[in-house]
View (cartoon, rainbow, N blue to C red):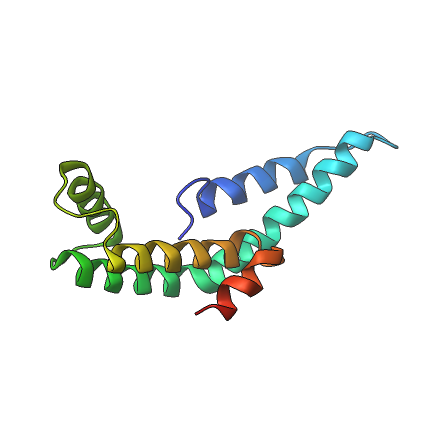
Length: 123
């Protein structure tokens, strides 16, 4: 479900970093290597979980909006419904969708986030 940076963008950035030759003792490169390792882990989690999370989001959006489409179209339709006032920002189904979407993205981006366990426990 990553929208930006995309899986491709992250993979290209990792490949570009890996192609660089580090100078011995380069502290900046050591830091960036840790960043690249985190990006690799994020890419792996996105590849493993992203399609399922997107499918779940599509089903929630279909139910919420009462229409069909792919994730991009349904998300755009949701944005338009909110902008136009056709849907209340306090709609319980909307809030449930946003919560589930945020939790799914946290599972990919920051699975060790301390608040994730609390979010999952409150379901």
